Image 1 (cartoon, rainbow, N blue to C red):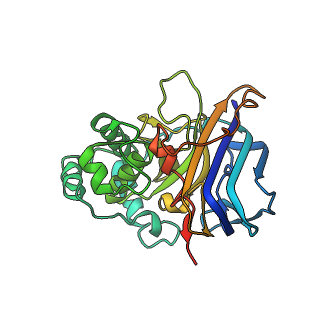
Image 2 (spheres, helix red, strand yellow; image 1 turned 60 degrees about the vertical axis):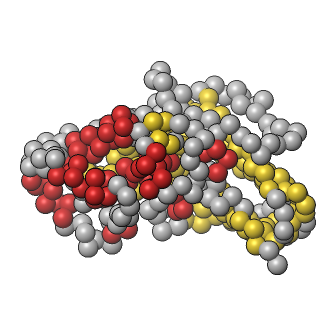
Image 3 (spheres, rainbow, N blue to C red; image 1 turned 135 degrees about the horizontal axis):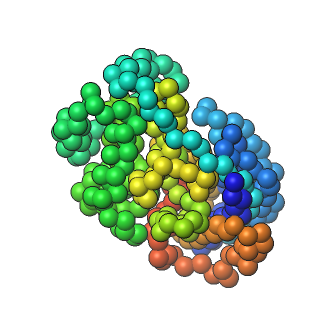
Length: 316
């Protein structure tokens, strides 16, 4: 049962003063049987009051206003969280029984939103890929793992070539990207099988494996396995989500889970700095602070674009 200490810094710097900033944060780890938040402190510049509520998908969402003129917005989240391992599906129920169970979910309001897939340039190829698999032999769990491995082997992990706004067509053509891109592709593939799948945002924590996705928020999917429930699948690392994964939010897609988003009034340029550090030792993140000045060019454009629409400008 590892304990992780996570510090997540987000800072927007504006070229002039803005007003009436309305912001939403989804930085609160999900609390369930496998994840317990021991302590969390969220600090926002100008110390606005943060109101929280639970959204349709069970995520904790915070919202706050910065009405007075300001030329920067900084958000610091410090978390101490305990995780426990989740047992894998035993996968002993007959294959045909599992696929029949999935068919009964298509009109279930709990799963409808997680079964809709988008048609894109890769749709036809994916359907051909599915047709080459014997679904009378493979259980839903096994084929999801095969699709996860397919993305891990066929797509190159490459930072800086995609952004949060990159379309599925672009990622499919490039066969490259970062964790969000891989999660988005796997999400469509699994839904095309008739298996409910949802997007997950969170953090990947240090372990003995050579994990990819550290230093920023991470993304993976959860697939619904009959007679078991939701299980996390991480195509970036070709792994089943474990006690090294800390969940922040789940939803239909990234827009439902964006760690930070908001609007403001002002005709300005903005710069973003984002950094995440995860440690297994208390106080090890104390030295992680905002830089005196931020640079527009960050080595990881995924980090640069990670927060949805990044403070969209509302000019008046």
